[in-house]
Image 1: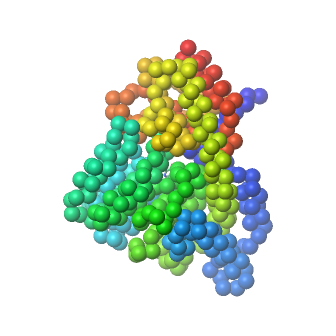
Image 2: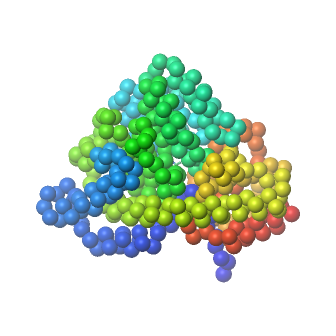
Image 3: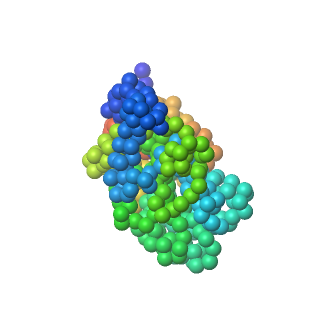
Amino acid sequence: MQKTIYLDYAATTPLREEVKDHMVDLLNGPFGNPSSTHQFGRKSRIIIEECRKFIASSFHCSSSEIVFTSGGTEADNAALLLSVRDLGVERIVLSKIEHHAILHAAEAIQKNYGIELDYVNLHPNGDPNLEHLEELLAKPKKTLVSLMHANNEIGNIIDLQKVSEICRRNNAYFHSDTVQSVGQIPIDLSELDIDFLSVSAHKFYGPKGVGFMYVKNSVKTGALINGGAQERNLRGGTENILGIGGMHKALQLKLENLENENQHLRTLKSYMIEKLNENFGDKVFFNGASGDLDHSLNKILSLSFPTLKNDMLLFTLDLKGIAASGGSACSSGSLQGSHVISALYPDATWPVLRFSFGKDSNLAEIDKVIEVLRDQLG
Ligand code: PLP
């Protein structure tokens, strides 16, 4: 039987074994409604509040600033919508390479609330041009800036400190989508002036359909989901105890292993870059800052072969048992093109391959990818 190779960890990660075991224990554990005041409810409540406390201590913020959500998409939508609906934001400044959870939410909010959208210029490597950001913010309009910490397609990392300082200086709110960076880059909120963050558990070996947002205590908004008083009145509904408990374990293990896993990912990425250069020379092109080890996530390598017109590479890899991506998960398996690559290289007609590594990836898997690419590209 053909061996399968999974190199799409930026799309999602499998549950870590210990997380799975913990979730099975939880399934056999407390079932009470966390809002019930009796002992059954209290036992469930503990699972939720222990997770909240752990997140707060890891990110150096207050427990009351953590709101559980159904994942990154909800947190992204909530940050944008609540800012416009409840904080008087009349304009969102974002970039063309944000995740669709931001881009499409911003467009929908623009349509429904008549706000302005401004896109910050990008440097050729995909980094936002911070001088242009300053220029945009000089316009006196209540603004939310939403710029992702690490890009899910090309891995570019922004300087959260610098962007947050620019936002503060210009009285703008700041949201960052940290879905790809949490568990890869430590985030210390006691040193950063940020209003909202979005996080998703399935990117760090936790369950799908659960995540959280950080909402700074001084930011006061109405409810995202009306109902009970759960989540500081922000998000009504009985909590996802199983997901939250699983996320707690997953985050704990990810943060404990952050350094050694990062080292492992870096070794894999630099090996793959070296092998690609060795085998394909100047035929291979690394998208954005993806080929720059000090400037992008260790887990993401996005590349193209601009002069070669073979647009079947992703399918061929799949046929050979290798799972990679053509961009974000939404375009996995299709060659419709990536909005990130189109924004960076408007004239590009070449397909994109995104390989993303995880804790169980190894050098032999990369050798196999190189072998398949060599067969295809000659
Ligand atoms: N933001 C980024 C940068 C992502 O990579 C993803 C997932 O692909 C999301 C948001 C959406 O997160 P979720 O799948 O938890 O809704």
